[in-house]
Length: 171
Image 1 (cartoon, rainbow, N blue to C red):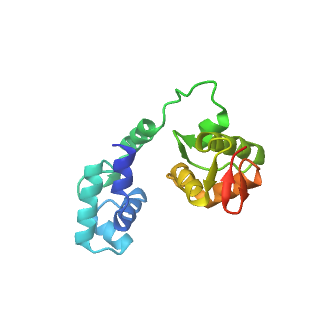
Image 2: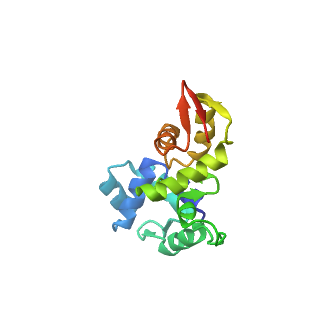
Image 3: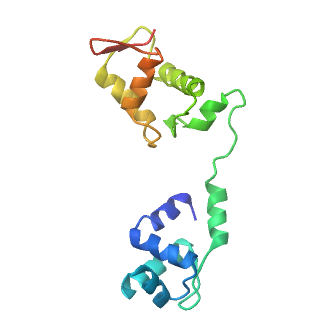
């Protein structure tokens, strides 16, 4: 099972409720239906999908969460730590490729990350309209670790970009 398959199996609210009921001890379709308040048909379909995804094992009367499969998915989806030892630990922690997965709360770490983003996104001395800045920063925010307006504000606050009359520039 991949992390993608796991997310897909649990994307539905009903399947999440069914899985939670099984994890909390429901062992039959009737038991799951009573605990979740879902119709038996929805429960049976949900259990079938969860079984196909490798999250639930057993048949009616013996449902259980497939903990071995969950452990395997967690192990397999972990990114390999083959990062270049010369790469700053802040960048390794908060970036996956060229995508921001979060912003550090500590200002010094956030500045390291923002400086990297500015260097990778904007050429020194080039003038950028706000729309171009937003487009460049949106690429970094694809994983939802932040939003482009927050990044733009931090880049200005840290003086990594300057703004004058809606035109941005990196010095």
